[in-house]
Length: 440
Image (tube, rainbow, N blue to C red):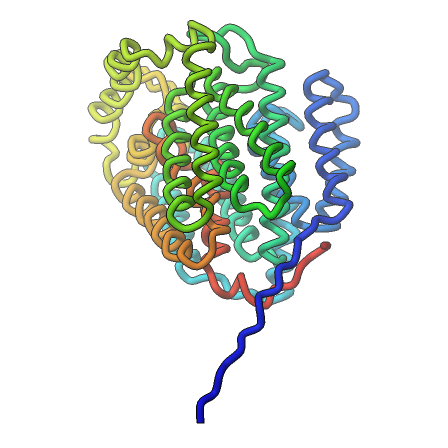
């Protein structure tokens, strides 16, 4: 007897965010306005109100953390404490209690890598050139571990979380671009960022948001107006990124976009991909023809050909010659590259390269551990990408950030670990099945 199995068509539900989420977006806008106009008297009131929303729904805390982390040190609560750190602690505290209450089992691979990295941090303290700075960095690392685990095991529906990340990234990208345009000033070769916004980390976070938003143009279930709005914000942000003059971030953006388009053309939406390619080509033509002459000069072949002879090459040579051979096994301690006065080593700047920075701070052992963790994250996510396209924005952003690492100390950036945490969340089975949605 033959049996025919009839599979019901998959129900497509539109995921909506709740009303409180838009209040959280309003709080983000107010943070930017108060910071721009230096209305410091109201900052603590705004921080108190936003904290209530974090306790109401931890997803709001994660979104506020992502927003403030993207702005880096632009928001200072008190000297030495940024807004992202406050929201990170609140988010970690809530999720930690939830994990204890639910007796959640943490992935063994994550536990292993985090313990190994912590071990390296402790061992390197015995060789550290800056012990007090290292203790501070270990505490920050423990906080980052907590946030990472919190993202992976946050008890919320993935579709709802991705929807919130989509809206938050678009909104934050728009706010960052507006702030950058308003506070722009003369820098090395032309327009760049000032007033609490260092061009390099600002451009790194801008690249992360650009790649994520670029992918959500295709993947987000929104109408044509929503896609057009995302495209306009993206083009504005790319223009701002170009004006920063940070070449490593531009390179990372190009790699991230190419990787995204490869999968978009191969598996998902070919017509939309070709349309976006055409728009990006037009923008590139606009940048190099209408853009400021000083900025265009920064990307000229003459400047690029002498780049490594004049700056980064000398930094790398200094570390490879004077520091790494003496501390090759466990390094000089976390965050010591660039945190010290290394005049006795004939060096006056950070490593400006992800491999050099890890070698300096954690030695060969650290490079193996971090490299293994990055590689496992990448291949694990790539394997899962065959089944679910929702992971594409985060793996593409992760690749773009690693490419930025050619010219920057990128391994400890919050957006790098956020990208990896989302990759792990979406690729671990026990976090994608039978989870409750919180606060939606």
